[in-house]
Length: 274
Ligand SMILES: C[S@@+](CC[C@H](N)C(=O)[O-])C[C@H]1O[C@@H](n2cnc3c(N)ncnc32)[C@H](O)[C@@H]1O
Image (cartoon, rainbow, N blue to C red; front, side, top):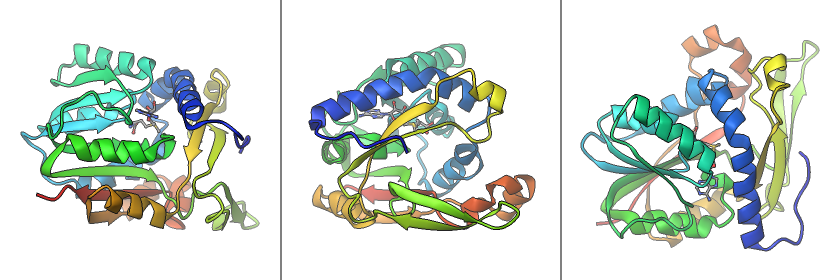
């Protein structure tokens, strides 16, 4: 943890968060495309895709798409995808991938909090690991609701509000294995922003040393606060998942065992009533 920005307006925090993502984008794209975003690839995205309803032939919007990895998976399932991200470098990389292997995805630079789309023009929306990084989550959820047709769904993943609080740390045994998590600041962190600096743990040291650490502003909410936000905007809760590696994955990647102790991520699907 590297600090808590004090006394900033929501607009300043939004701008700072987007600047930080723009600075992260080059390294994030290189390292995740090299396979070092292990949580995403081994259990977070697989769980997301497993619970996703049929999307073939549906118009989908991917919010905070990064370099487009998950958007491409949705397009390969037959969805007609539009995607956006606030960081131009991510969109440049995503659009380059689209040019070299066209999947019919339209990318643009835009914020989750002000979607450049007409009301009710999508059948579904996704957001993979973005909304915890958005300063104005109220507007982001309202915007997703607005652009969905009645009966459409939003499915999103976030850092798990109960376990990834601003005060957390592992208890380890003599062999250094992570055995249990200590968690604090759950309630006092609600509505707070914290800044974290980190890199993908699986990336080799010499590769990590070539890039600055990722700097991410997290806008914390309790679980209850997330659920009440969704309900207040008019969504109906439909499904939850807490991704964790399965036995086969764990045999191949025993280093991911801590993700069986706690849930790092939460996936939620909500629906706009007809
Ligand atoms: C953890 S990355 C996830 C990227 C991608 N969805 C994935 O799963 O690989 C979070 C993404 O959210 C984007 N983001 C952050 N704030 C945003 C905002 N207000 N509007 C749109 N995108 C935003 C970042 O630029 C970044 O690409």
